[in-house]
Length: 134
View (tube, rainbow, N blue to C red):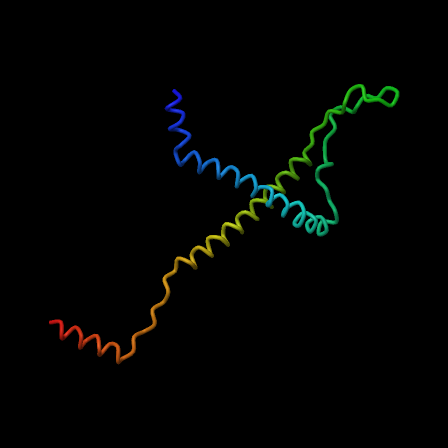
């Protein structure tokens, strides 16, 4: 069993997965920072600071006795769902744009360099060379 475990751990795919998870966690921190620190303030400014998280339907109000909450409020917090969906769409759009940019850069690197057209002299010399080979 120890030998099988050692073989499993030493395979490249396990290491690749571990590296991917660590990099993914670091990338998630970058994406969250861009969304929370850059995009959301802009969106908040455009929407005049509308915050959906406070929207809810109260099913049962909180019971208070002597200023203390005896029974907490029961509510459907649909505003949190709306805010989460908006955050998801913003994050998805940001990741899509990053991947699209990376793919564009990768395609430019993979494109073969255009070969300059050969001059008439070069073509004539190639014909002479080919004739001499025959």
